[in-house]
Length: 581
Image 1 (cartoon, rainbow, N blue to C red):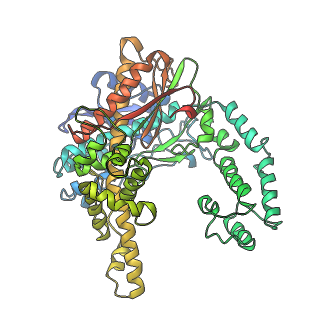
Image 2 (cartoon, helix red, strand yellow):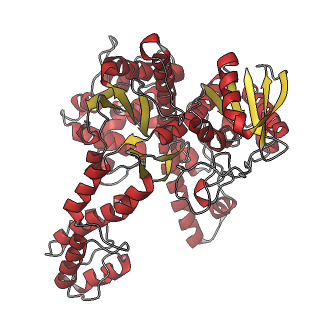
Image 3 (cartoon, rainbow, N blue to C red):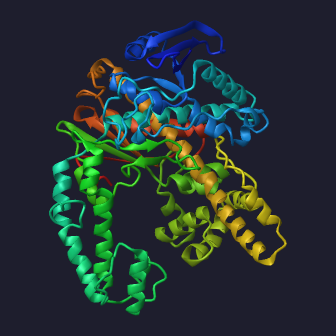
């Protein structure tokens, strides 16, 4: 059963229409006052358990969460369109030639008029929308047409089962992203402020540099004999370094570390503290932490490979030094789980390289460290060498230790290395490559294709460089894209199983009027590529740990079926995020 949700004839109304799985109308469209949408969705959810179809979950679901409503499943037309418009699986269906692009997503930080939109000048999604908001959304007829077009494309594609799984997982990710933003990571503001005070000094006024950072800047000016130096300016810093005889080609930390000079240590320390001040300082706290929660904003499929990105707040790269502020509530713990060697295991599965798969486990299901297994077979037991070689193969390394070690890996696992090599050659030729479930690279630009045909010597050299760069991209895309699909399936399955647990008699779901989970309900609160975090009541730790592992196995079987390779996850139960291993 589908429930289509779209804008109504008036700004204060929405339309809801029920359709059967075959697309026929099950119940005429209802016009609902926007103020009554939450109760209407709750009633339909309880009665029909539909798959909600909307232009974008981000335009609708946060408002429902604010009303205390959580839905089971959805079909996010925009996310699915982004996949179908490029997927090689759907290339012959006619969809890519005939689809109608959805209106662009509304940025809630810039005066959104979306279903939950923030007022002008807001920087996050905490406040309720003004009653006059007009949702930027397709009307019901457009939603219905796009749903039919997408379902037709999937059914007539070369791999309908894979595409169906991918689009379902992507849409589930949209629900998870909204829920994690709403729930937020438990965050102790007083601990964060204490850390900032210890490292940077007292909070400065008017966004000036804190005293310890300014003291380091003074050391740099003295050591470089540059009284007017602005150490935050790469150009200014480069000139000062060169005048001091430090012939660095950039201001990157790893390159600066190669030089022996009294300025290097304070400069590296300044860079570290400056990054903390600008990225996760007092302004970050004011903007992103409210009522003891860091409300991260996620962008599902925000990277071309399908990996998630962050709209703001740095959700995909929380620095280790501030993780000390992420502390579970009393009576709760943080369950942090990450997939072990995800991309190398994905490569073994994609290439069907049984030798590489065996290095990561045995037929009895006993998992091993994949890098250690490879090291034992061909790198004299040196795990670090095996890791460098394997990541070098995935990312296309040709120089340094990686380039030197890759040939040995190719002799050991020819199927795996040939798989990524073929993807690289396809990219160099300008062809598209595709992840296992059906996400494809966008086509090359006309400029790229013109460059490849040029007869000018200088342009040919640039074209060859562009081709090699694209080859490195496509080499990694097939692995990273499929790894992102596995992670999204893991996340969706974990959400589904946690909902089942919450619905059990032992842990009845209980959401307050503002949508926040009540004590006793485990909640997903963070996701980082191959890592998830669950804020879990202490009495449910063992059940949730089991669910984390079961969800990992389910994701592997959903994508690859029964294969002689598992995707194990490492699980830590901690009070503080910084203590997770």
